[in-house]
Structure formats: structure tokens, C-alpha cells
Image (cartoon, rainbow, N blue to C red; front, side, top):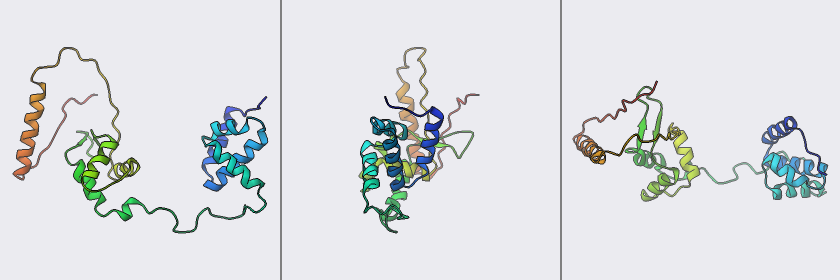
Length: 195
């Protein structure tokens, strides 16, 4: 029967595992799995949140006499893929252009802003601007430009929707475009602040 650690020890193991380099993580996971014997790989995979293949690779490295266990770094300096911010010209400008008409914010705190677009939709709109990026890069752009996630709050409707509900939003959009084209500032304000 597999002996498992206490919840407190598991938390300490997870914290320690997160502090290690990629190479040391797989080797630490390998050592722990070997210590536990049968079922150890599955258990350590669950506790540390790593793939069983990572654990097996760590175990293999520990058994390999030719493995350089004392090497201080995993990769040579300068290795790896360059950041999208370094290789894609105009990335920030294209992002801000896409977000221009899809940004909202808090009426009481100007530093709080969010968007109604999903991450895949932002990536799709950037692609239309000839910029091909993943949702991971979109996440980095949102963070860089201080967008926050807005939690959706569901409420039950108290009655049927007004037949002209959409008309008011179309009218607002028409006016916003007209004022913007004329060079006038436009401010949107939600007056239903909750206490």
C-alpha cells in the first residue's frame, strides 16, 4: 500500500518544488517517486502537478552516471525563443487600436479598466491587423496595459426586455462615432454604482 504524506508536508513539497529550476524539479520529483515505490509516480505527479513523463525523465537522469548533476544552468545564456514584444513591430500600437472601442472602466477609479472581448477574440482582431499572436501573448498585453479581469455577475431579469432596448445602444454608438469624427472627446459613464 502506498504511503502518502500529510497535507502539511505536501504543501511544503509544492512550495519547494516551485522554487527549483526546471532540471532540479524533475530530479526532485524523481527522487520522491523512487522513495515511495509502487504508485509513487502517480502520487507525486498529483501532488506536484507535473507530468508523469517529467518524473520518469528525472528518475532516468538520476540513474545515468553520465548525467551532469552539478551543471548550474539548464540552457545556455541567450537561448530560447525571443519575446513577441522584441520581434513583432507595432505590437503595442496594434493592441491599443484593437482595444480602443472595447475598453470600459470604473467611474470611481480611473486606473481600473477592462474589456468585453475574450482573449481569443483579441488575438483574432490582432490577426486582422497582420499580427499573429497566441492568447498567452494577449494575456501579457492585457497585463502590460493594466487591464483587469471583470467578474461576470448574473442577475435574474425582473421582467421582459424592453422592445427598444437595443435601439438606445445603437443611438449611443452613432453619436460616439459622430463626436469622435468631429474631434470631440467622448466619455462613457455607468451611473449604477453599487455601494
